[in-house]
Length: 187
Image (tube, rainbow, N blue to C red; front, side, top):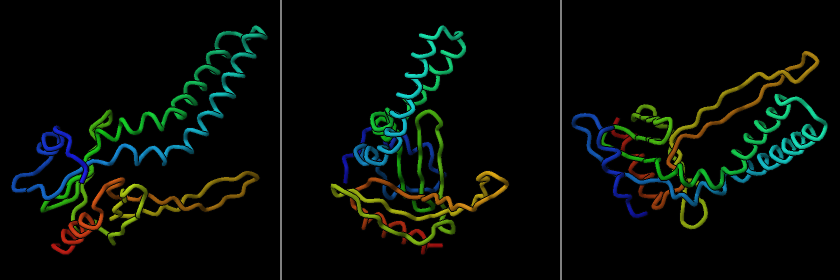
C-alpha cells in the first residue's frame, strides 16, 4: 500500500460515528489523476489560445474595455482547464478513502469539503478496473442518467451520462475489493 500520510487518520477520525471502526484507509495516488486530465488540458489550451487571440485583436482594434475583459475572462477559464494536470495531483492529497465496519467513505477535504457515505445496501457489484503502475480502481456504484438534449430545429436526443462511484488510483485493489464485498455481504 501507499505510505499513509500522517494526517489521514486525523482527517478521518472526526467523520466516524460512535461504534464505527476504521478497517482500511488510503488516498488516491496523485500520479493516477494526471492521465485522466489530458482531455481537459487540451480543451483548455484551445480556449486559452482563442480567447487570447480575441483579446489581443480587440486591443488592436480599440475595442471598449468590457470586450477585452470578456476575452481575458475566457482566457482565464481556458488556463484553469489547461492547468488541470498540474492542479489535480495536489487536490488528490486532500481525498481520503475509507472502509469502516458500517460504510464506505469518500472524503474530499479541500475547498468544498464533501463527504460521501455508501452503506451496504447502496453498494452495487464490486468491480476492479486495472490501471498502470500497479494502480487500479475499485468501483462499487454506477449511476446512469438519461438526459434529453435539444440539438436544434426542435429535435432532441437522449444521451447517457454514467457516474462511477469508487476508490480510484489505489494499490492492493484485490484486497480492497474483498473488503468492500465483505461489507456489502454484512447487510
